[in-house]
Length: 289
Image 1 (cartoon, rainbow, N blue to C red):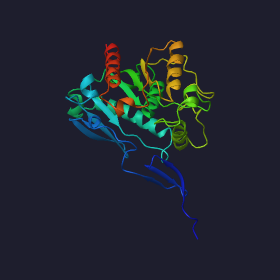
Image 2: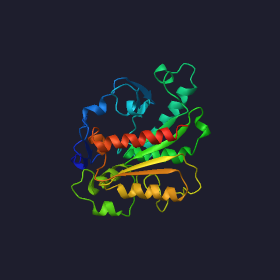
Image 3: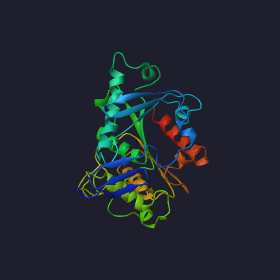
Image 4: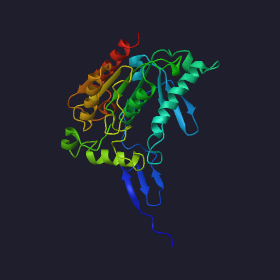
């Protein structure tokens, strides 16, 4: 007789992990995003490998970040944990960059991209877990990577990046338990995504952990790091920026006081969200020439 099936882990009502290793996922997001975040008029989708899609958004009013920056935004899906633990998501991010290079080199590339995009002015950005992916791509690619020609990455934008470590920071230890992203939820996210047998001091999770390689002699493209003042992850993002700056890397740091993790997604029309867009716009302009 088979052992009874029972739930061993759960996440925000959208993910359930069972004792036999099976996983249930809801088709609904774990939280609602305001309508304007999907207010992208000119959008198309490409296949990225066998399991993932890549979404391309062209600048058209009123398309939020696309119209604010007058930029083509390429938004790749990536494989999710716990079915696909790290480094799967980072590998998918790298595949998206290589897809862009293939488009730049193709004789018959899609006009959606080639008619409007400048492959010599590319910025890689990520929010939360995406910020972690962006950091790991920056380390993997290095500065002005010739392996990506004719694609030229000009900089990275890390928005409330999701880093971790076995030793708690002050903001993690003292942050409110009722925060949207509280310590219990942070621990659960890591528990579901760290490579099997590893801890949150894994180099992909903790850039300055005890087993992480030194970034001292690595050349990096300019990086903009943005944290939210009331986010439990604030101290990790701030420490990341300060350490790299001391190493002589070109780092810009911005902290939005009183704001929570993902504040710009929860309320894109707020004044802090608009101010953030101006910070990103300036960073892109200053590093595009």
